[in-house]
Image (cartoon, rainbow, N blue to C red; front, side, top):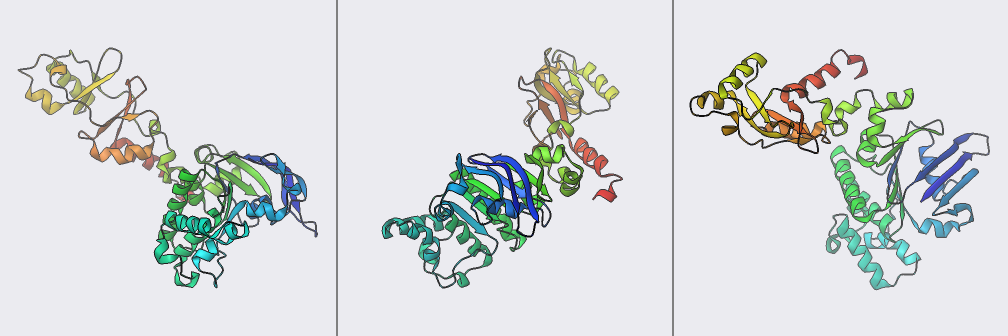
Length: 376
């Protein structure tokens, strides 16, 4: 879709803002550019629509060299959202959003339909807001209009330059969710610049970490958190940030292997004895192949010790299980609903591989943070 081949940007004074970039942005991808101030992230994004013409290398969109593409035509085919919204104060919202379709020669009926469709899409009732002016809106509402305007001519590519940086945290989160919803529905290719790592982790399919005009690492959020390839990347992300984002922690890291189990044909008396030795009050019931069949508590065993010959007769179904592909976030959300405080973790064949409890969750997180105050 968008391909950088040895792309650089050198200014007339000799300062090289971007150095030999080599990467590709896939069609429909949400790519985040992040790094400290002056690292070249905004320059990299602006080179895509020639707001900052690149001075070296080859930059192509759908295989076409952008240097050979008419600049006006190129910019009209790319949506652009900035932090200050860029709305014209003397234009109504309908006029602001309809500006690019108007420049493209759309007829009035088609343009109005598109404007109203977009206002509705970003959560602003067109009957209420189409005739209003930017000054009549809150900052968050103005930013919604900015997003709508970027989508007006149905571009393949949308560039977003720290669009939510000036908003309060609640409004910012709402708009992040709105953009992610729109991206899921519309499948646009989005290049998003931010200096906020939490925002990058939430928004990006992949994240490029830049420093001094070069990309140090370009990877998925999971890979960046778990396997930073450079010391600066690890420092910039924060060594403990993965534990602030449990959705990126595999459930296997918060589970205990080899939990107490019993075969269904064992007698309740033998099961109780085994429980005492293991110092537990519940057993998971497995068949010979290790497939999870049920769960039994010490109370149930004791209550049925005289009228049941096998554990299988009194075991109960397990209501909550987690697949081995689950995350620590899934476990945190499920543990309070587990009747016995135990969540079995199973593989694709429903064989037990471990359990998650409140204790395993607490101990995992506590052991990681203990003694790491200098890294917080």
